[in-house]
Length: 138
Image (cartoon, rainbow, N blue to C red; front, side, top):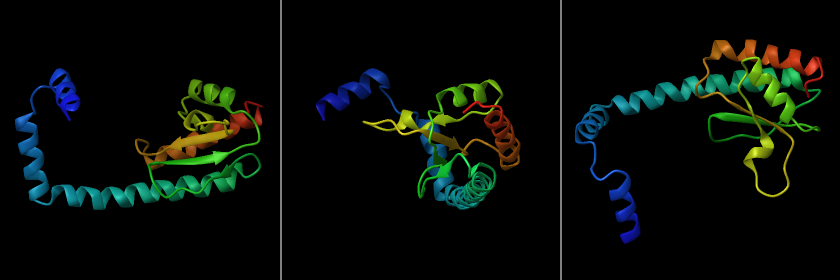
């Protein structure tokens, strides 16, 4: 505990009182609970859309992995996806290599985050990704 107190003091020696009071009022008035309920539906819809499109458009090269938490979906592949990830980013599609998130033996695949992506941008992004795959980016 002493080390934690010292680290807290060195990085942020006082609490933001105004912000904490505003957050407490937001929570007490039910705003936070409403926000969580609304966002659960938004994220569930994005998750379902992304899942459906991955199965429909990438079944030949990606195998979706089970996902019950987080704001991302992962899919395994038979090949190293590093170059695909780099080319996708160059074409405006932000995704990650599955191997960057594990310890030990690296798994081939992709991680798709959807928390900050509007639902209407998911399908066009996956279409760009499919075009790259068809051109041999994988």
